Length: 236
Image (cartoon, rainbow, N blue to C red; front, side, top):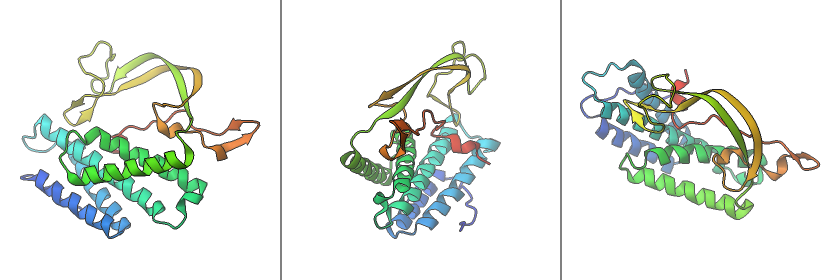
């Protein structure tokens, strides 16, 4: 189910975003999760077109950054609604597949909200973030802090995602926002050195679950993910 295409109000897109956020939250409160997801997808698609086409008349760098903030916010909301479709089920937490799926969506949503919380003023964002923290506490209570895979990677060459030059020589700074894009270092020549087991991971998605043991303390696990808060913008 898809909600019809949403046209972004060029005169007051921020007020429009507030209305859309409230509409999404109303769907969540009424447990109309499919509608909440469809709304997010429609809004995200509109922001993606703006960021891709760059045809907004007289748009400033700050405005393009605002469009990116809003796109990431609604993607976090979509993640939240997706995990809600699982946690609404009776005894969802007694199924290993559900536990892993919710864990991944929890961190996708949380990481995205972490990236925008200081850039957007919204009580709804804070409520959703608090709900995610509460869900994370439930995991800690039921499964402890966990053990995680953490690879040591030697990066021999890294280029800037903005200008495509050697990131050590360009003027851009990793993690900073530029005209609706986030600067990343793109590794082009890497070598995997070792894999360690840690309790404080860089990426919590690489958690080792006890039911993933195959034999003789051999576990099936993710050792690296390619998650970025804005990676959905590259999806067709």
